[in-house]
Picture 1 (cartoon, rainbow over the protein chains, first blue to last red):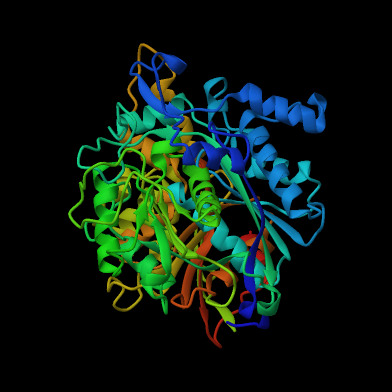
Picture 2: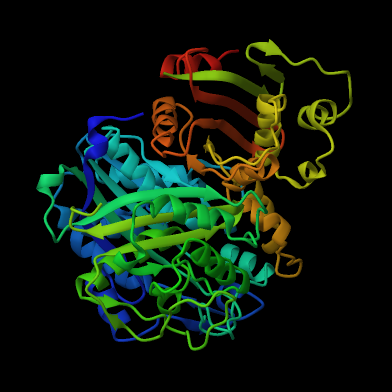
Amino acid sequence: MESALEHELIVREGDNIVSPLGLDTAATLRAVVAGESALRRYEGLWDLPEPFVASLLDFGAIDRALSARYGAERLAGYSEFERLSILSAACALDEAGIDPSSERVLFFLSTTKGNVALLETDNRYREEVLPDWSARRIASFFRNPNPAVVVSNACTSGLCAQIAAMRALWSGRCDRAVVIGADRQSRFIVSGFQSFKALSPEACRPFDRNRTGLNLGEAAATVIYARRRREEVTPQMWIACRGAIRNDANHISGPSRTGEGCYRALQAVLQGVDPGELAVVNVHGTATLYNDEMESIALDRAGLTGVPVNALKGYFGHTMGAAGVLESVLTMHALDEGLVLGTRGYAECGVSHPQSLTSRHVPTTRRAFVKMLSGFGGCNAALLFKRGGEIC
Amino acid sequence: MLTIRRWVRITPTGAVIDGRPVHLEPTEDPLLVALYRQRVGSYPKFFKMDPLCRAGFIASELLIGEEPSRFTPRGDRAVVLFTHSGSFASDSHYERTICDRAEYYPSPAVFVYTLANILTGEIAIRNRYFGETSCYLLDRRETSVLAATTREAFLDEETHSVLCGWVDSPDPDCFEAVLFLVEESDEGPEWIDDNICKVMNDK
């Protein structure tokens, strides 16, 4: 299947990050560049029997920002998860300067658990506990007339939603795509990861030999894409070039020992790419033993050993449905500053196929990167980004 | 032209393949278990699955169970599924394991099913599919989005066949699975809204 539009490029028109490190992309990047982390130890929170380390939002600050923008009344009846998503989308829409009420705009929501915390007070079936409900509410807040789609591919959702948006643009189904990634943490999610023994009792250490697990985080991030003809692309524009989603066909909750799906996703997006062009491969890097090991194998099989690698979970934890959007956007902005961000928490190689990681930020002049994610259900995703259009 | 090569629809009243009802021997088993025992068998992982995965898995077995060389690993077939209730049945089940402070027993075996895309993973694992797996949450009436998203899955150069459709199971007794095998072909009904709606809403 091929159409004229497929030769056009998918460009970023706006973005936003709402994280515990800052309420916008610039503030979050500044904090990360300064080496700050939002990871804190919580004891007794949500009445959980075990303490945990996580990166949690100050919801007062989010509501103040929303009230200043819309007045408190307009946000009445929206859940915290929805308000968080609305704030992030609103900021990105400001930057893009587009009209979200246009029928040529589509909304994509990446989330793993949406409003699941509402089950704590009432565990019965109702529309408002379904992520699809939140997506429709968020899109209609912006008076968008189209059905919003929720991408529910576990921890890879943030990349999968961007890939779905790229395809909708290429097929001509829309002219602009608003991709929101968001997740709130709760007793539900933390207890689940604790039951898997996947949580680290301290700040996580991606790819490090002393890593003991992941930290959960909450955040929202938005990226807005449009389609552009090649000649319209300027050297400053970020292009989402090519994405792929591949399955391990191995196990529903454990990564493949050969990194099969991850390798295949990388192979698909790297066709015709000289690894020397890549400023960085921004891995999932959850800091669980199995994930990081699997990624090191996949990177090696894909011929990427030697390319700088970084993982960002040490700054704001694993933000689940937000991760793919947040980490893509943050990497674009860091590269705009000429920086490959350091892997906070990393000290000594702890994977079987050593990669080029460092805890320090490193200057770069390269303009392309790959973002990787993997998740439950055996899914893996990779997406290639480049700044400027000539090499896509 | 993208066409529907084969389709399956399962509701609590029975299963239909390409319009023909599936005949089952009389049994006390619930429908999905009866279909498993009489039409699938020897895959005990089925009994670990949550209601959503059971419905989708059985439908996928009826859809492709007779395909020649079916377990040969392949990367050219994507699994793209749509649901509205998603993992709600497992969310609710898992919530019951943690809501009581005295009876707190969070189970990883339950928690893993609180992700709707496990459904696509189960089908990929069973059939050795290394291609794309995608899961979307959608209102059932939005068949045009289901149709377009599936069509767009073929934009991935490695994808030449898509196992797709609608799976929903808000609780174990209430389920619906309508799966299609969609491929570039001259045979079969065209992959368009009207034909999809005909299958999905056939009573």
